[in-house]
Image (cartoon, rainbow, N blue to C red):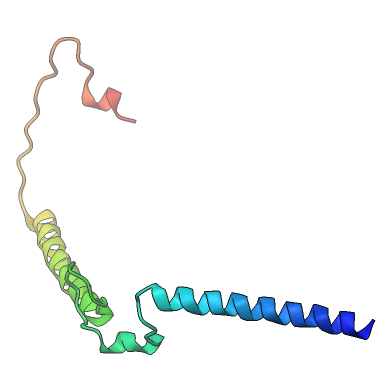
Length: 105
Protein backbone atom coordinates (compact mmCIF):
# COMPACT_ATOMS: atom_id res chain seq x y z
CA UNK A 1 0.00 0.00 0.00
CA UNK A 2 2.78 2.40 0.90
CA UNK A 3 4.71 1.66 -2.31
CA UNK A 4 1.59 2.41 -4.37
CA UNK A 5 1.24 5.86 -2.72
CA UNK A 6 4.92 6.56 -3.34
CA UNK A 7 4.55 5.51 -6.98
CA UNK A 8 1.58 7.88 -7.41
CA UNK A 9 3.52 10.74 -5.88
CA UNK A 10 6.50 9.90 -8.07
CA UNK A 11 4.37 9.95 -11.22
CA UNK A 12 2.80 13.25 -10.21
CA UNK A 13 6.23 14.81 -9.62
CA UNK A 14 7.47 13.55 -13.00
CA UNK A 15 4.40 15.07 -14.67
CA UNK A 16 4.96 18.42 -12.93
CA UNK A 17 8.66 18.42 -13.90
CA UNK A 18 7.76 17.63 -17.52
CA UNK A 19 5.22 20.47 -17.64
CA UNK A 20 7.72 22.90 -16.12
CA UNK A 21 10.20 21.85 -18.79
CA UNK A 22 7.63 22.56 -21.51
CA UNK A 23 6.94 26.01 -20.06
CA UNK A 24 10.67 26.79 -19.87
CA UNK A 25 11.18 25.66 -23.49
CA UNK A 26 8.24 27.76 -24.69
CA UNK A 27 9.56 30.85 -22.91
CA UNK A 28 13.03 30.31 -24.33
CA UNK A 29 11.87 29.71 -27.89
CA UNK A 30 9.45 32.61 -28.10
CA UNK A 31 12.39 34.82 -29.10
CA UNK A 32 11.65 37.95 -27.06
CA UNK A 33 14.34 37.43 -24.49
CA UNK A 34 13.74 37.61 -20.80
CA UNK A 35 14.11 41.34 -20.14
CA UNK A 36 12.88 42.64 -16.84
CA UNK A 37 9.95 45.02 -16.86
CA UNK A 38 12.14 47.87 -15.60
CA UNK A 39 14.13 47.78 -18.84
CA UNK A 40 11.46 50.03 -20.35
CA UNK A 41 13.12 53.03 -18.70
CA UNK A 42 16.17 52.56 -20.94
CA UNK A 43 14.18 52.72 -24.16
CA UNK A 44 13.96 55.84 -26.27
CA UNK A 45 11.24 58.24 -25.18
CA UNK A 46 9.30 59.70 -28.08
CA UNK A 47 5.94 61.22 -28.86
CA UNK A 48 6.30 60.42 -32.55
CA UNK A 49 4.16 57.77 -34.18
CA UNK A 50 7.24 55.69 -34.94
CA UNK A 51 7.21 54.07 -31.54
CA UNK A 52 8.81 54.48 -28.16
CA UNK A 53 7.30 55.39 -24.85
CA UNK A 54 4.94 58.39 -24.93
CA UNK A 55 6.23 61.37 -22.96
CA UNK A 56 3.31 62.44 -20.77
CA UNK A 57 4.97 65.73 -19.79
CA UNK A 58 5.47 66.76 -23.41
CA UNK A 59 1.89 65.79 -24.23
CA UNK A 60 0.60 67.97 -21.39
CA UNK A 61 2.74 70.90 -22.53
CA UNK A 62 1.33 70.50 -26.08
CA UNK A 63 -2.20 70.46 -24.69
CA UNK A 64 -1.54 73.60 -22.65
CA UNK A 65 -0.12 75.39 -25.72
CA UNK A 66 -3.19 74.45 -27.77
CA UNK A 67 -5.52 75.64 -24.98
CA UNK A 68 -3.70 78.98 -24.86
CA UNK A 69 -4.22 79.39 -28.63
CA UNK A 70 -7.91 78.58 -28.28
CA UNK A 71 -8.27 81.03 -25.38
CA UNK A 72 -6.65 83.78 -27.45
CA UNK A 73 -9.08 83.13 -30.32
CA UNK A 74 -12.06 83.14 -27.96
CA UNK A 75 -10.93 86.43 -26.40
CA UNK A 76 -10.81 87.95 -29.89
CA UNK A 77 -14.30 86.70 -30.66
CA UNK A 78 -15.60 87.93 -27.30
CA UNK A 79 -14.13 91.41 -27.70
CA UNK A 80 -15.55 91.60 -31.23
CA UNK A 81 -19.02 90.59 -30.08
CA UNK A 82 -19.02 92.99 -27.14
CA UNK A 83 -17.66 96.12 -28.83
CA UNK A 84 -18.18 95.66 -32.55
CA UNK A 85 -20.86 96.90 -34.89
CA UNK A 86 -22.43 94.27 -37.07
CA UNK A 87 -24.53 94.42 -40.19
CA UNK A 88 -27.11 91.70 -40.59
CA UNK A 89 -28.55 90.76 -43.97
CA UNK A 90 -31.73 88.84 -44.46
CA UNK A 91 -32.57 86.80 -47.51
CA UNK A 92 -36.10 86.19 -48.69
CA UNK A 93 -37.22 82.56 -48.58
CA UNK A 94 -37.69 80.80 -51.90
CA UNK A 95 -41.17 79.75 -52.95
CA UNK A 96 -42.31 76.70 -50.98
CA UNK A 97 -39.49 76.90 -48.44
CA UNK A 98 -40.27 77.32 -44.77
CA UNK A 99 -38.93 80.39 -43.01
CA UNK A 100 -36.07 79.65 -40.64
CA UNK A 101 -38.08 80.56 -37.54
CA UNK A 102 -40.77 78.01 -38.29
CA UNK A 103 -38.37 75.19 -39.13
CA UNK A 104 -36.19 75.67 -36.04
CA UNK A 105 -36.85 73.64 -32.93
